[in-house]
Structure formats: C-alpha cells, structure tokens
Length: 315
Image (cartoon, rainbow, N blue to C red; front, side, top):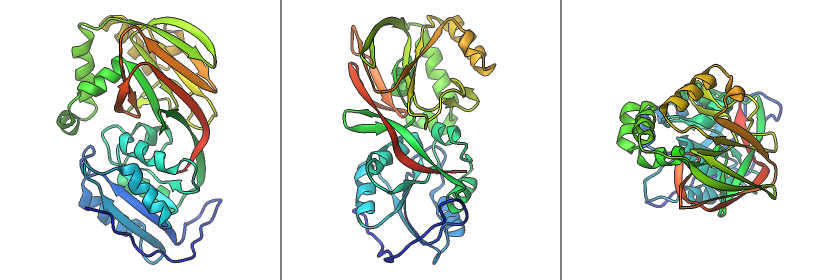
C-alpha cells in the first residue's frame, strides 16, 4: 500500500539545547515484524508521548515489500524533520540511508531483538523511555557512518563467523528466543568453523591476517552487556576494526569472559586497528558480510568512513 502523507504546518520549532520539542514534523516507520514489538502498544504510546497539536506525527506500518529508505526520503521531501524507525538495527540502518546529506534528524524507537545502537547511545530499551528521549531531547549526537556500495551503516560491518551467524539465524527463532537464538547458532557453527586468510587495506596500508571474524565497529555494543570496549564510540570520527583470531569454542569462551570483564585488550585472540578514511577486505573465498545486523553480500568489500553523517536524538 503506498504511503499517505499528512499536510504538515508551514512552521515548526524546537529548543536546540534541551527542553520539549514543539511542532516537530515527525514520520514513524513501524516494523511490525521486528523483535517482540506490539504495533498497537507503540501507537498508543506515540499518541500519549507525542500528542497533537504540539506534535505532527504520521505512522507508516511497513511490509517486507517496502523500500524503507525510499519511504523515509519521500517523508523528508514532504516536510518531515524527524524520522523515527520503530524496529531493530536493520530498520534504523535503512532509514540512515535516507538521512545522510539532509538536515532531517533520527529518533530511535528500539523495537527489535537486540537494538545494539540504541544501547550504545544509552537510549532506553523500553518504548516508553525511548519516546521520552524523543519528546524531551537533552542533546544531539552526530553519528559517523560506514559507506559500502552506496549504503550507510552506523552500527558496524561484519565479515566471517558473525555474518554467518546472522545469515543462519531464523527470524522466527529471533522472535521466540531473542538474543539466545544468535548464541545457539554460534555454538552450532563453531563445530566446523576454521579461520580464514584475509587481506586488509586500512587507510592504504596492507595487512594480512588469519581470523574467524573481522568487524568494522562504529558502536562498541555487541548485545546486552557484551561490549568490545568503551573506546569504540559512534561519534568519534573513526571506525575500530576488530580482528578475532579465536579458533575454537575454548578460545571463544576465554574471549567472552574477557569481554565481560572488560579485559579484551589483554586477550591474545583479538586485535584492534583504527580506520579513519577507508578499508578494503578480501578473502581467498567469498565470505558473508553483514551491515548493521543484516546480510548485505559477500567479500571482497571496500568501505569508506563518513564522519558526522547523521544527527540522532539521545538522552
């Protein structure tokens, strides 16, 4: 069904340094298939937290056939100044594609399974709390992005075991078991997984590595309490490249324990590099690639770092 747009008023304003936003032209892209989302509850909370006439809100419930990025672009062309994806990291990523190069802002409503970007930005995982952030924004953060084949990713790009895990974890399992579904897939894949040889060109410098995973991390949160490190920030003008050298379940168990203890810097199975401009990743055979939690293709890949690409509302 094609989108139908509201006629937004000609004027709108908001307080730049905190306080309640007024007359913000807002377009909500609600993904009913994301995580454990309840579309009717989200609609109720939107009406309660972003009431008319202070807010001009339109809600579009998406379908698998929709081009979410194009819906967001159309909304911006029709006057929307704030685009709010209500879904998981994949939905947010599609909206980011539309926001780069515009003055429209991003408001995250975390309704997915993991919502890693929302966690990294300290946006509440509860829908009500996230809407409070949008309604009473204290500050705005300019997120960096990873540009790959004309698309933009603000959480990260993964190559190897993590990408295979995303590829083989079924949607119905994610909806039923949540984050545990990914853990179960990793355990199954580890049995026959072997590290691969990768050639990395980081800001023009070539490095050859043997790794199970190569991750371009713009945000340090993996899931829940799992974080690569506090040094990885989504607005610092750089991307951290993580090379995971673990070879088996024992290596991964040790790495997981160090991550939980915030001691990953001392783990011999992980190595960090900094990317400020671009990176190329190639392997001997094509390896799955994910962008913001969604399968987007296979190696080789060439990514460019875009600094301060999108403005997002945060606590």
